[in-house]
Image 1 (cartoon, rainbow, N blue to C red):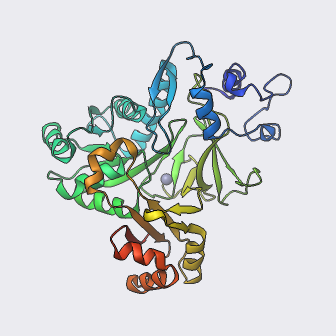
Image 2 (cartoon, rainbow, N blue to C red):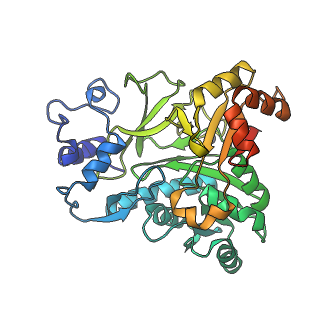
Length: 391
Ligand SMILES: [Zn+2]
């Protein structure tokens, strides 16, 4: 990985950071120190404008990859061979943590042509010693099953919506483990995928701008490696760090790439750093991902749902740490192949395992309080899932 000094030097040479003061003697000693916190943050719009600007030259030795655009429009992103090697090294650590090894036979079912996640996932599994087969998404469920019959994998890595579309039709032996990436994983998708493929799902979290971390078997968050990413949790309004364990916006600094240095990048996701060590015994810190920052969820037929109001109601009804996730479309690269199997889903999960709740009662409470939701559900415009969280 890059050192902090190497990252600052790369940023100093990049026109993306022209308005930043990255000069001796005014250099932070480490990310997070008071001088560091005077640096501005970088948001998606600024980065997109920079990358699409006519004056942006492709950095020396870099190749351009088209990002997935799962959270916006696709954009061209430069990567050097060194960048890809560092990211492959990180994905290799994910693979080892999950249990991929030289006995693993891996089927990576992801877009291979342009989306970097396909390449870096394959590279990561190779680093862990697995025999790896990259399969593109073309052909849909029938083609995936045929490829699977030929490869006989022990590990499959794909997006949640692809595995959820395939799961009811999967016809083969149980996997050793599964890996999901590229879009939010719903609790209901996790259960379906695990039941039908017969193996534990490890979800991974990362953006095209910065790969972050992966779940261990305890599922208390994403373990991340501080030499590869510096994670800050900032108050979305005041822009100041919040205490450990408090929710805020996830802001990322990547030590993975110098072709496009990523400093203080606003992910648009909310989360918190977990205070207590993970019961699995690993030393790498844990990041809990809560969901997108947008407070209003854009449901079908122009209905806008205030997520905060719904969560407030759930808390008032006694549900511990309620979480509301809206998945209106599958991740964009997979959309053409899974759209027939996909149902827009509003998922509500909560944390208490001692306080069993009655699903029909909660459903009724929600419908009474939010009649616009009741209408969408009754007209089959969305699927409402109520579920205890498995972590
Ligand atoms: Zn752990």
